[in-house]
Amino acid sequence: MSAKKLVVVGQGYVGLPVAMRAVEVGYEVVGVDLDSNRVNSLRAGVSYVDDITATTLRTALDSGRYMPTSDYSSTSGFDFAIITVPTPLRESLPDLSFIEQASMSLASHLKKGATVVLESTTYPGTTEELLVPILQDGSGLNAGTDFYVGYSPERIDPGNKTWGFVETPKVVSGIDVESLKRVQGLYDDLVHKTVPVSTPKEAELTKLLENTFRHVNIALVNELAIFGHKLGVNVWESIEAASTKPFGFMKFTPGPGVGGHCLPVDPSYLSWQVRRKLGQNFRFVELANDVNDHMPDYVAQRLIVLLNRLGKPMRGSRVVLLGLSYKKNTGDIRESPALRLIESLQELGATIVGVDGHVEENRWPKGVERRSLDPHTLESADAIVLVTDHDDFDLELLDTTPTPVLDTKNRLSGEHIERL
Image (cartoon, rainbow, N blue to C red; front, side, top):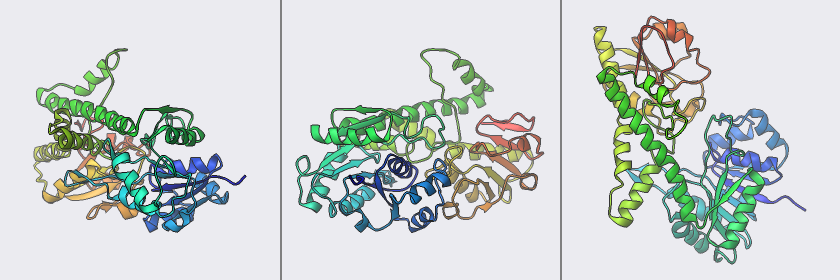
């Protein structure tokens, strides 16, 4: 019997691990991405996703069951399709255009008996109110009888060596009983455990709940860090002490802001839907947004004070930012707080040097000099900010450099180190 054909739309931090796992368990996989640079990279066996090694990618290519492409005609006759495209905010409003484009493109190749699953983060109701009508209109088929539809929120945690795509339980849903059966069957092939819920709305809310929980708690400790500094209290030590409590407390730590697709975006999807449908404000989300969105500005202000103590203005100063991606050991720079920090410091007249070997060249911020972490880079700077604490950074260099350092991750111990 021939292998089942799976289309994975989007070959980024979510879609590529899904595609690699599907090839591993025997599916014929078409990986669709409209970024030609990424497609060319994949065809050449070069991975831009830190969690996927070149060996894994090459094995998939050599199997003859993985085809990276920008051409939807290659998706014809698929048995399953998983949509993992971005859902960004545009001027604080949800932008579902990538889902719409992917859905329309898949609809023209949809056959009877196929199953389509949405993984992209979105507000409750998207699968049934947006995805299903587009698929029906574009195919002339009826959802639930001719083809099947479900939602399964992505739970990829880039850089996590313990809980990868396969190990993390997968929430699954369908628009009806048969759709759920087929969606769950697909993911039962791919992951160790699936968790079915009643309808796509519950699954869509699950994702928003998970990230809103993190967003709100990070905002709490970020605000504590600001006030703790003003009060002369070491909030990092207090957090460590509180985390020894074996019940009723979960450890979150401060930082320069939140980034990636999830935390800066997902809670706002929930807040927007509550306001649109109910006419009410989701106050916790809006407060968390206010705190977390302004953390890069707070870091900039702390840097201004640090330089002022040395008799240096920000204008004309050379500032080294260590780590530009939003999360350690990944190259994902989407919504990274480093981007807002760069913008603020450049507006103040600083020259910015970035150190981050994980970020792709074509996603490197404009106007930022790219350097490696070495004594010359550090000693030629007027100030250094540890933004993202990648494991491949030799942090001992920071403990011994004479250049003042602002540590936003509490990783350093030198006498000249100033902590967030």
